[in-house]
Image 1: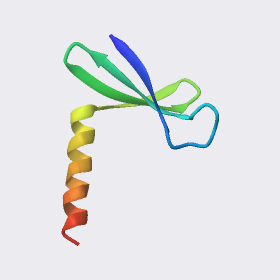
Image 2: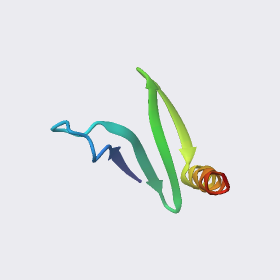
Image 3: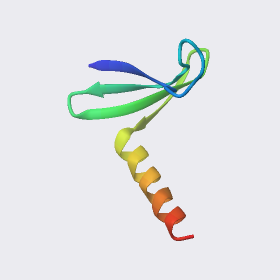
Image 4: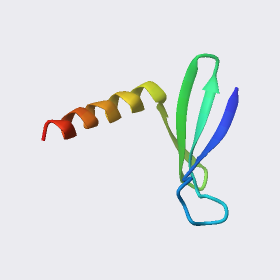
Length: 62
């Protein structure tokens, strides 16, 4: 398993703020966001890509 922080690389801060973590286990990729002190929300990379691609399609049709 690999856990890697995803940071805002366009930030002006000396240490870019963490946006979420990517977690890779075998062929499974998930994104995890901290929502509270000990609470996390996780979404699969495939679900994220699907939703972003659908939004891009809708935006291009406007």
